[in-house]
Image (cartoon, rainbow, N blue to C red):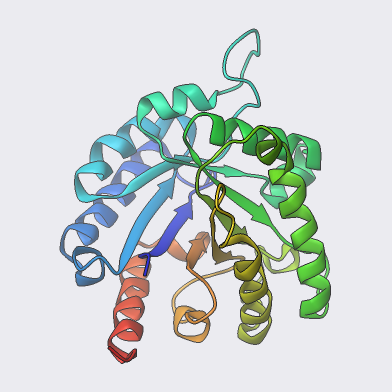
Length: 258
């Protein structure tokens, strides 16, 4: 079994100094926590662009993977203000977030842009953390249909170009982002299980499914049988919350039959 993937996008909540403090604390947890040292889980963080080098310096020795919250569609050229996947990979990033609901809503990212960024990530050896989710609360079957369409659209150019590499699908119902609580466990399990069946078998672009959208401590034991990890937001701002989630990963693993 692949390790449970647990990570956080820090968005723009933290200053550079606070990012360093957070990464140092989480890296300290990674060095000693049995869920990490025993290979049951792996951690990642996505800070703001200027904090990436410091996060790499502080986190990599402990196995903390570092990614970016966005990337440009092109690898080089006259694209003022963009950050290319080529440079992110050169720095040591292994992941990049693509298509978050806030990027779509606030910055007008279309399905075509999301697909181009997904392709750029894979072209540069980065694992896209492809954010997908239905805009309105509804039945799981409706969510599955909506989200599978988003995944197919995002991966279509990469498939046409014969690109290979792992993909992490971050299922984040838009209506649950920033909400007081995550989506219900039954809803998450139904949708994520269907996504897993769709993306995991792809021989060229195999996918894992993680859940985001107000995810935090207490959720993992209720969804562990249907997802491959969790994508954390503000509920991980306290590094101790990350340690509690790793405790939950360990507890669930201990209860599973050997």
